[in-house]
Image (cartoon, rainbow, N blue to C red; front, side):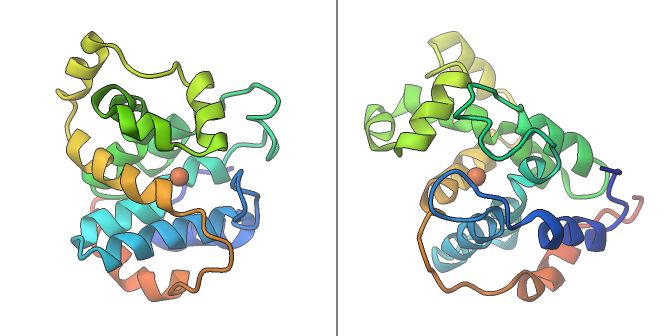
Length: 185
Ligand SMILES: [Fe+2]
């Protein structure tokens, strides 16, 4: 899959591959739209809504199949998404995509209840992703730029798994997303 050159390219990937199964009862596109919608409903600023929408972009770019977690494979999709979107979209968005898996491991360290509340699929992938952070990893994570945004996005990531939820469309979010496209890209 080529490097996206514009927001249109990014959105085209969602249209083309968004039907992929997210891992619970929703598709990748539904998951993305639900995460953005939950962030919007919570009154979050646009940068969080945009980050919530795009955090799993890497899931749409790999060719490893939709059942990779069941096969014990971690596609490291957070790095795929980061590398695809870096330079095209604002740093907050690409950093939170890169850090959203680490944010889950961080929250498991910070809030024991968070770990208890994880869905079965999230727990399965947590295991592949290295389990909860230790103190050293958590301190390192807190030194990352935009780790706080990644943690906020993570809350909506965990919510975006609702069967048959009505959300705005990709096109509805597009004008807001366009404001985070870097001019230099
Ligand atoms: Fe996600």
